[in-house]
Amino acid sequence: MSVNFLPIRIEPPVKMILARLRVRIPELGAEERGRIESEIGRQFVKCRFVGAWLELSLPEALRLAGESRDVAARLENCSGAVIFTVTAGARIVEAARREFADGSSFRAAVCDAVGSEGVEAAVDALELHLRQRFARSGLALGKRRFSPGYGDWPLEAQREFYRLLEMSKLGVELGDRLILCPEKTVTAMIGVTGNE
Image 1 (tube, helix red, strand yellow):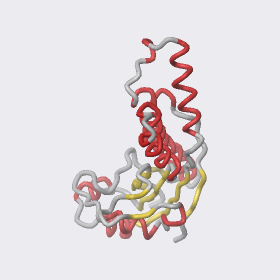
Image 2 (cartoon, rainbow, N blue to C red; image 1 turned 30 degrees about the horizontal axis):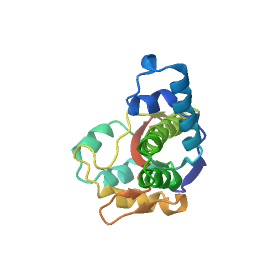
Image 3 (cartoon, rainbow, N blue to C red; image 1 turned 90 degrees about the vertical axis):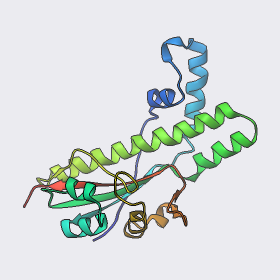
């Protein structure tokens, strides 16, 4: 089993960022929208989207799932699974804190929205990459990814994700409370079917 590391390039998901900021596009004038989109672009360059992924056999995936019935149900009829992580990096989180400390709640909110929506878009891009890669081998990924801390899957699974995916190589650390740092980091598992 080897970990696959991947830089992820995406365009800023402007519509999603504006939605997170609760900005109603039809109500914006051209000048105001231009100002906000310019700030989104300025902050987006602070993101460095990188990911790592690893294939697991079904027994390995079930072992990682532990006692979680939710995960076991999602792995039913699967031959294995893929686990992955994506991070936006520390610079965007640091920028949000700095902007807030400097009194610019607008820029801080933009940084936070850029990091949150950017990492979700990067996860979607990585998932699409994996779907295409696995399809070439006659395999298919499940419809939905799932993450530690959701449903009945304890957050303690983050320890194994962190170890298996060698997340320190991505600049990600795991805190005592099992929270990933930088916070704009996502971990997930998705089942694999086919070639049984």
